[in-house]
Amino acid sequence: MTSVAARRVAATVAGAEAGRRLDLWLAERLPDLSRTRIKALVDAGRIRVDDAPALKASRRLRSGERVEAEIPSPPPEEMVPEAIPLAIVFEDDEVLVVDKPAGIVTHPGAGARTGTLAAAALAHAPGIAGVGGPRRPGIVHRLDKGTSGLIALAKTSRAYDSLTAQLQRRTVSRRYLCLAHGAIRKEEGVIDAPIARDPRSRVRMAVARAGTGRRAVTRFRVLERFRAFTFLECRLETGRTHQIRVHLASIGHPLLGDETYGGRRARSDEALPEDLVKGLGGVALHAAGLSFLHPVTGEPVELASPLPNRIVRVLSHLRPR
Image 1 (cartoon, rainbow, N blue to C red):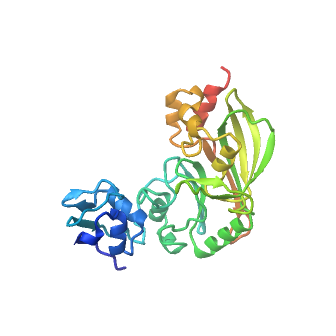
Image 2: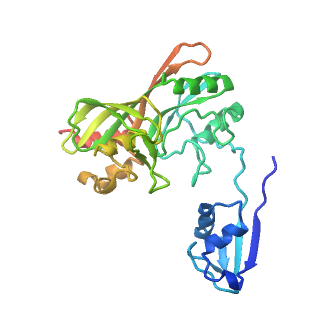
Image 3: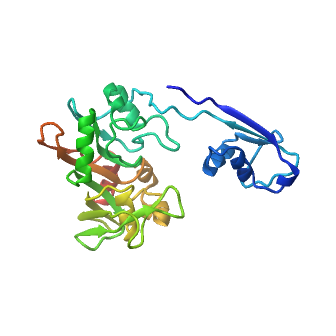
């Protein structure tokens, strides 16, 4: 595999270019880079103006200034295996199911290139390298960084094709346990609301207006009630990004520990002891059950993961002594 080398670009601002924004000026000279990428280079201190780091991408340039840009080589397409311990719940020649702890990213992405579940799985089962995409070997579905629980990986191409097809047909069963802010009045219910990228934030999803976004369906059932929280079981009929978190937040009950969708409630956390909230290491959401048909035998595979201590501790605190 041929890697793209790091490069340096330097140029002087012409008189006719005075007053132009730095990011727009650079975009003309570096057409292969997006403005988002250019801003990231500025934030990383890789853009200098007259030998001083540029502080803002929106900086207005002056005639005669010398701009230098250092563009590092992109990460390799092929993933490097990392010997990270895995909590294996099920494994055979076709499928690997892992109990992922909160705090681990499923696969590389923006801001997370190493220490991923995918890299750990690749070290455990090198044959996964040729399954799926090079940066997501074996990954057929994902869990958010702050979510713990069961996640399945395909070890062969036929397993990958089978599991992804089962997900599309909605025949894979996924059961989640979570702790939400507030008192949910209904004993059970269905949230059927489309989800799309939040137009105001690149890292958030949101319930979309009717006729837009992708259909998303979450079924919930109340398991236990507390003064300021509700313990729930949720089942997914679809698998959209951040689906449970977005859906529950949309009805006024964001999950405990969810700083992205919890707003002011996530910051106050209803006066829970700080060590309990920090001890979550993410969101109070756990993938507790997973079932699918084995890609080769066709036999049902039903797996369960006990609620982790990070959530058990909070529930113990909330329950009457």
